[in-house]
Amino acid sequence: MDKKTGRVSDISEDDLKRLEKEAAEEATPSRSRIMWNEFKADKPALISLFILVAFVLFVIIASMFLNVHKVMATDIMNFYNKPFQSGSFLGSDSGGRSIGQQLIIGSRNSISIAIGLTVISSSWGIFWGLTSGYFGGKADLVMQRVYDFMMIIPMLMTIIVIVTIIPHYNAITLTLILSAFYWMGTSRLIRSRTLAETQKDYVRASKTLGTSNWKIIFREIMPNISSLIIVDTTLSFAENIGVETGLSYLGFGLPLGTPSLGTLIANANDPENITQYWWTWLPAALEIIILCLSISYIGQVIRRSSNASQRRATEK
Image (cartoon, rainbow, N blue to C red; front, side, top):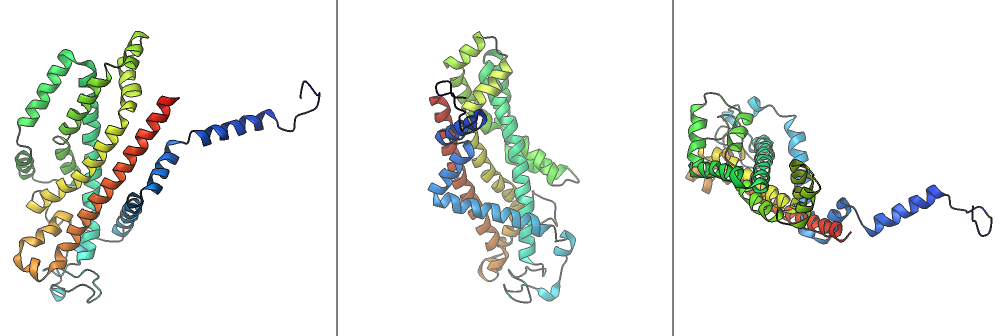
């Protein structure tokens, strides 16, 4: 009801609130809309996103229809078949095994290990760095001595020794072994940023108001360094693909008979494969390069969108 004219308004109070909410959303776009706008503005990153999503979906779905034992079974009748011959899209290796099928299963294994390694190592590294940087003092001193001790250990050689000692292991075991060593870089990076954040006014104000330490760490400091966390996690994911691939290439990754990108690239150790049977190793090498470049482009866009969201939140 309009108090001045005494007439009923055509717009109800609920409709008015809805219109105000829509206007506010248009004025301050959500994080997802900001991210999508960044992707549209960066064509290489948008293409990389489509390539990565399509490839991961293809690998997951296609690997469901493949049996590892049948794929790795020797077939001397298909010895070093060239690509597009005898129904083999990418040819076969010295055992007559399909390179295309090994590439699908190997990609699934390598990507799964890289995801698990990134989640575990980054989560622990972020927690360690936030805790060490925020509390400081004796807690920081003790935690940094643990960090220094871990850094002294020859990481690659230790991993090779552990893998050699364990009689039976699988992808999960390998992921846990790698996670015990690959959290330190993230920890150091997050700690240095947290030390700077603890000196800012919003942290001091929260302490004065009696906010608990863990709420300050995870609800205030952590969101403010989210762009750094995103960039580090993205780069770590690309790096972790290479970690598993490198170990498998050296023969200390996944168990024998389990396809991996590293085992496929290891075919290049044979000089004949490099010159004559290039299809046994080149597709896997190209795949790693494309995946790492795509992840790098996507990470840059996510970082920019995160920075834009933080700036809008600060302006409010």
